[in-house]
Image (cartoon, rainbow, N blue to C red):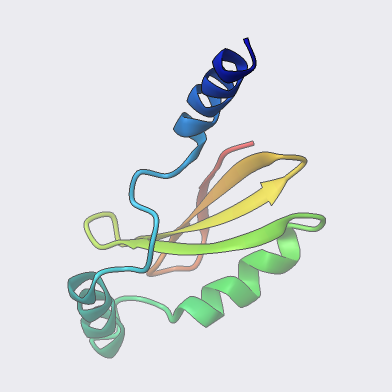
Length: 99
């Protein structure tokens, strides 16, 4: 019975783990650098400086960059729930926030 409960607990936790955990790929980093040099994208630290103060009480987990959407996704955790904040990389404006 104990092992069955352990398996069920792991099964419930599995979807909470991101499919692509880990550092960004070299290709993704290269694309961000090219966009920044071209003046098309703001620096991540500028985006973070703007967004992090607007997220009081939340622990910042880190960013991802979507080159197709030209958007950063900042990940936070609050009360055991992951919150995603999507930010337009060109303007720095928040375009979507999950709660």
